Amino acid sequence: MSDLDGARLQESVDALSDSGAAVMAHPADVRDSSQVDALRDAAVAAHGRVDLVCNNAGIGLVRRFARNADSDWSLLIDVNVMGVINGLRAFVPLLTEQGHGHLNATASLSGLVGDPEMTVYNATKFAVVGMMEALALELMRDHPGVTASVLCPGPVATDLVASSDKNLAGAGAEPIETSEFARAVAATLDQGLDPDEVARLAIDQISAGRFWLLPHPDLTFEIMEPRFEAMKRGELYVSPDWPPPR
Picture 1 (cartoon, rainbow, N blue to C red):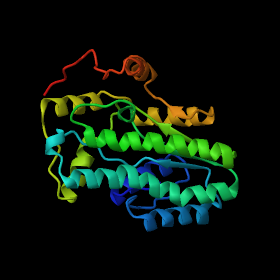
Picture 2: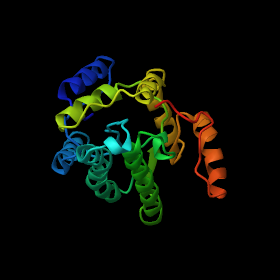
Picture 3: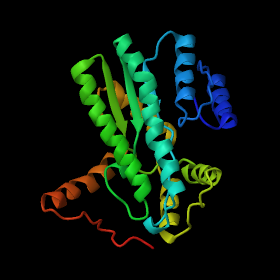
């Protein structure tokens, strides 16, 4: 396991070790390709090979477009996009040389449909979806023993808002603004799926050979089906709940 926060990483590793799992902690910043390479090398040294790679690091942001500073764009692109790119650069050559393995990246339902006040986050998550779809097709053609998938969850009960605020502050950016919509997003996350359940669903769906890992299928298709119908008409998809709080 790897994470930027070494103390929290060790807490998770200790808890899993206490339950009988064989787990190794390796702190790394996904923005630094040399640290991701070192993570790969440590995994190979410990286990001899890598079977599954999960690019899961991410930062969220709810802020009106006009208030997004350069630091917002830089931080979210560095973590949410370049972090996945660094993971793929480190592990794709290893897995293709092995001739087997699976690469996953966490995007979001926000990588499939846009949301007001989430322009930067949407941009990064749409990038992850396109990246993984293109990579999966390339691997299917050139390295059929290696597969890829993209995880697109809806609300998950993580501390994404608090951890994102911490990283935004560290990058010199403003905290996430407390608009009514931002508060609604945070409340929705609090009521979301348990992260452990999302992980179990992801592993089950990867094992079943799925590319699209959708922990919230009903919600996903409730949004995507009318969105595609609107697309056929050349119209912007507008949620039945429109307008959202300001």
